[in-house]
Image 1 (cartoon, helix red, strand yellow):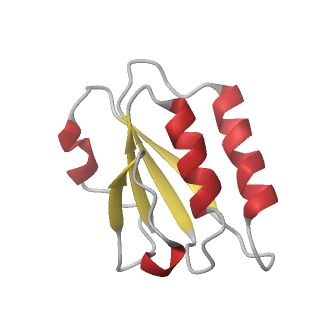
Image 2: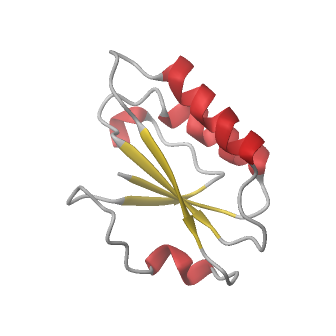
Length: 102
C-alpha cells in the first residue's frame, strides 16, 4: 500500500497517481487529504480514469482519500483501520520512486 501526503497540489498528485498506477505489485493508494474542502468529484473521477488507463495485467488498484479536518503534516501518522496489508510506503506527492522500490 502507498500512502501519499498531498496539500493543494493536484497536478503533482495526478502525476504521482499516473506513475504509481503502473506499478505491478501495488494494490492500493491512500491519499492523505488535509485541505479544508473535500476532494472534488472531478479530481476523483480523473484519478479513477488515470488508474484505468495505466494499470497493468488487469489488476485492481484501489484509490482512497483519507480525509482530515485539520491541516497537519502529522496526519500521515494517524491510525488507519482500512489497511489490508502489512507494508506501507509513505511518501509526499512530489516524490516519484521507480516501481521496483514499491
